[in-house]
Image (tube, rainbow, N blue to C red; front, side, top):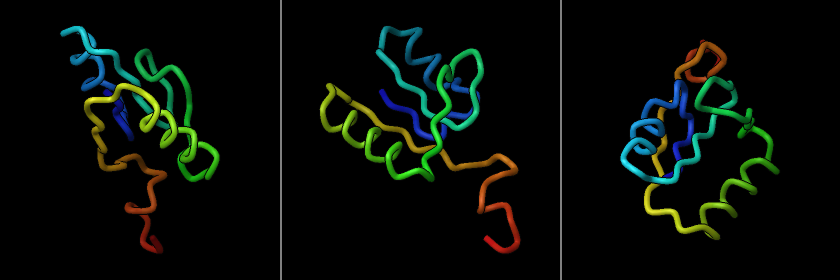
Length: 77
C-alpha cells in the first residue's frame, strides 16, 4: 500500500497494523513518514511511479495536500 500525501501517516499505520506492507510518501517527516519526498521534483515523481509499477502494490491512496505550503491554499495557486 502506497499512501501519497500521507501527512500524519495514520492510514499507513493502520494498514501496517493489519499486516500490510506500507510506503507513506510526504514532504514532511514524522514517526511514520521516515523520508521526505518532494513530489514537485520530477526525479521523485519518476521514482515513485517506477516503484508502484515495479512492486506488488495492491492499493495507492492519494490524499489531498492540506498543509499551508500547498498551492491549493494560496490565493495565487
